[in-house]
Image 1 (cartoon, rainbow, N blue to C red):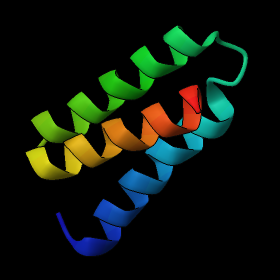
Image 2 (image 1 turned 135 degrees about the vertical axis):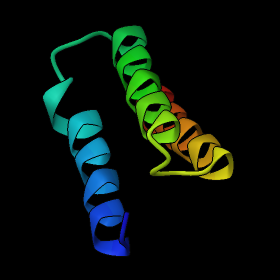
Image 3 (image 1 turned 90 degrees about the vertical axis):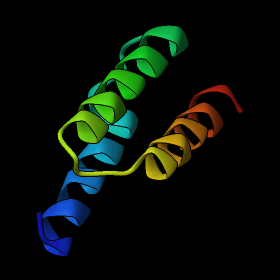
Image 4 (image 1 turned 120 degrees about the vertical axis):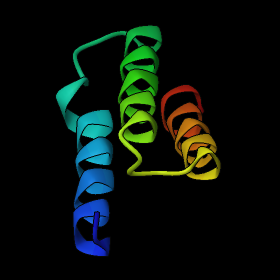
Length: 64
């Protein structure tokens, strides 16, 4: 995967976090964000370090 595709995948992840799951409660939004981050890691799009950063980002966005 090239850098442009990776940036787009991360942008899509953030877009879903902010907009697509807005109608869900906090726990459901967090679960969706983690599942999406898991899928990115399993697909080899992000590393485990990047996965942890997405988890932190989801936590900060949803719960703070």
